[in-house]
Image (cartoon, rainbow, N blue to C red):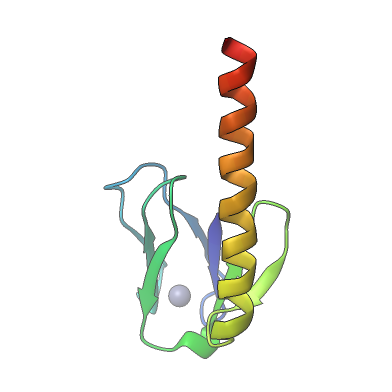
Length: 88
Ligand SMILES: [Zn+2]
């Protein structure tokens, strides 16, 4: 998961749980790596969340991105379960 700052057009991605990355203009930051989404910033109207399937949702659109995030989380758990049964 990535976020894009609409102030400076910087797209940033956290590589690991404690890898906090800020955009060029410091309007926003992301961390949490691949396991969960954690981001913040000054102006949520200027933060675009980019999901793994290239869906882009504005951070200020809280309801929409929470729905999408839930979907992403369910898919992730499904994938983990798939790998689990594959290994057994
Ligand atoms: Zn920025």
